[in-house]
Length: 153
Ligand code: IDP
Ligand code: MG
Image (cartoon, rainbow, N blue to C red; front, top):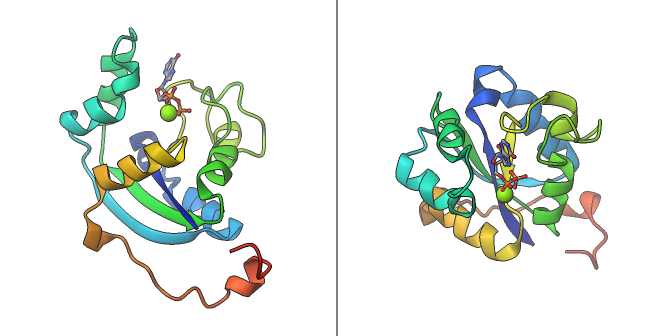
């Protein structure tokens, strides 16, 4: 099974959507491996958004990620990284399809509800960026056979 990092951005915390978004991942069948509320630091954001540092909106994006604390979570499941990206939808909330998280809750390019890791390499780095090892939990998933065929996990 894969682990992926999801951040419920400050816009989501401000709008009171934490429960609704978490609930979508739970209903999908993803397993919550870690979750905490935290202020994202400038240092964390410089690393996390390093691929955007030349963009004109870089500072504005970082500021928006520090408007309030964020909720960082780690979700686990078969192909969890792609599953969560598909659930998140396109980056621009105005283009994201209805049915996706961004398509249902966002009308903005920047204020788009969630961050989701985009590949196995980045997911591993991002989980480590925001969680200590003892904050990631592995526990017996009692209902696994109700979520997957036995050859899927
Ligand atoms: P992603 O979140 O879908 O992976 P990235 O390209 O990694 O998209 O960008 C990270 C974040 O930066 C986006 O979620 C969004 O908040 C913001 N962002 C990216 N591109 C733009 C843009 O063109 N205008 C405004 N904000 C942007
Ligand atoms: Mg990205």
